[in-house]
Image (cartoon, rainbow, N blue to C red; front, side):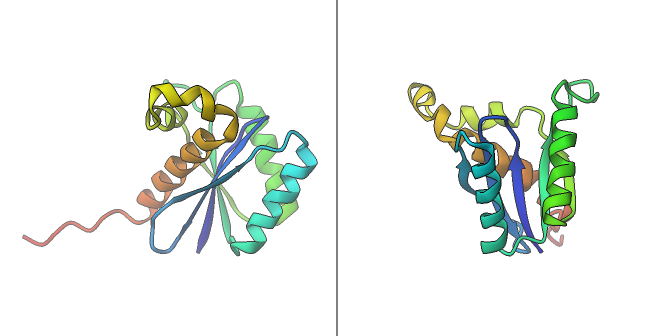
Length: 142
């Protein structure tokens, strides 16, 4: 399997790649202001990496209810399925952007916001969480 992790945003789409090894790696985010160009680039990434399934961050609230952006993400997931014909797995993205942002030095955060670095790190956390759930670590023998 070849997975593409996605942190959806209306301005930037963070991306991460993972395979049967079980390690997520961030990819450059889709930052083009033109939505059509972002979709074209997404298709290019899917083809080049021979992606077999998509893992999309889903905006749950802290209480487990769907967040206000959930309908937007639902529509994006439907468009992904229709356009690429791949399965789309929804994964709780609670606090991933905060965790991704905290991995960058405070003085550098403002400068990297528009680059998509934080978004792709968030996509990496989303995908890694999914991969860890699929393939939990094996406990060492006693």
